Image (tube, rainbow, N blue to C red; front, side):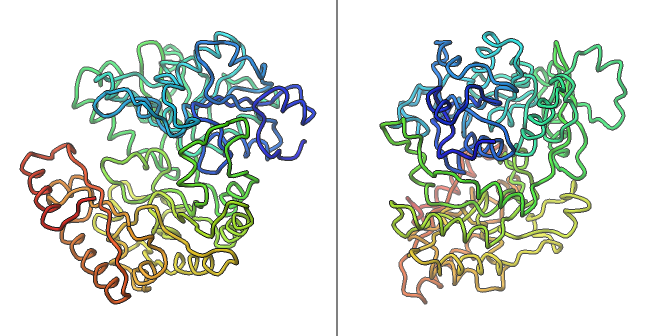
Length: 518
């Protein structure tokens, strides 16, 4: 097998330079190709190449021009399709349904380079050109639209994205293990229609076949037709599939659609520390592909950042993380991250600043519950609402990590740019807040209280206003003691279900009284 190239090929000429005239897998993405572990197509491409499969990338193809989708030819195994790092409609429209003029995942920040509902559009076009080639959907758009779902932009309930596209299988969540297994089984001659049992995938089957098979062990949701007509049934369906998003105790989930039945297999098991280390230590260039003559704005804030972990056990009501990365925190080893920063420090444009060391919630690194391995995350409890006594909330491992990174030659500062969960900071006894304020705040610390009304924070599964006030006081006192002028940047939300005008007035007054304007 050809060793990992500097960049995954985007043109036939690049492939020929590597001695290749055919790809095993071709990835089609709505983002520009940036070879960095924060960009999904780069991660999946590198993981597949590492497993022995050649990978080409078609980035932001002109969906109205079939030549763009044909330029790398027909892959031996499958096309992998993703809309990119963000749902294409979030990328293309504001919350007021105005067309965005920019797109940080495109060269020069130019908008309009991806279609609406990109995963469906790309799949349709590919299927029309290469009808016999399997199509694998993945990425955030596919993952979060895998069941019947409310679509804000059309103000309607839409079918599962797998029912709306000609794709053969959908990978949900973090998909490294799934795509390698799909590639392996296809490579051995198995037909895509027979690959129905991989954890972390969604398949569809004929209604007649579903009716004839045993449903034992499956969770059956109200059908698409039912949930599109009845809000209470929609809520019931969501609650049912939400409870099955655990890799240890989760069960397969089925939902009937007018012409097919969509079946989600149980979620994939989290990667081990060793597997996660390996994924993030693959030879990413940490740069945009050299074919671009304009910068990709999304790269700048993450170029010299590192991912310390995946998963978040907070289960905030408004958050999609449970459905994508899961509640079980998966942490990298300190040694792996030290090696990654050492490599970064040798890059010509590295100025000594590690922009972020984090994950979905920065200070959940290495936190865990002893029950996760055998029972999974509890179905009837939320780990942080209140903080469970079985949860190890020590920040000692993260403190050790940050100290090790600070000691690396060439590193001047190591910042935490991800948000932190302040109730966990208050529960800590390792001196984390002092360490954080002294060394790892760039001047502004991001936190997400989201609201201050008690009834709203309770519905959100967020800490109360009292907890936030206590944290703000401790943060202020700690910075005074250190002689530093540093600020909290809070995220607040309006319009959460159950939030009233009176609740918003209370929030506005709180922001005013505490001078929390940004």
